[in-house]
Image (cartoon, rainbow, N blue to C red; front, top):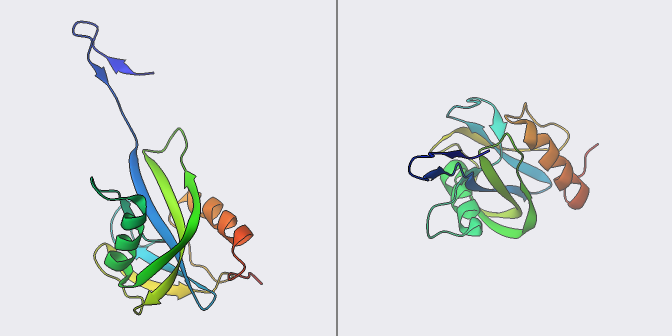
Length: 145
């Protein structure tokens, strides 16, 4: 239900924010960053960020990997677009490959590391598990024991 003013016909649109991120892979391992900001500070997720005006989702995913994990990535494909009624974001997720750099925490990340698919740390968000399931079902580079 929209919030509106009946006196002036103003309608308040509470639109979700567009976010993009990348699950980057190197040598069968998955890049994750340890969040440096709330919500879920200290827990792990994949590099993501808000899409700036003038940027594409692809540019944002590449930029966030560099800003948060100090790696250059090449996007291989779109994994999916994720949202639900409770979320304030629409999340565009790509799968990519690390082409340069050694993972290290930068900007809003306390740390960045490569993890084997069967030894992932505690993940920050409920949707991370669902997105990972989609990733594991579609990427032969990531084999879980």
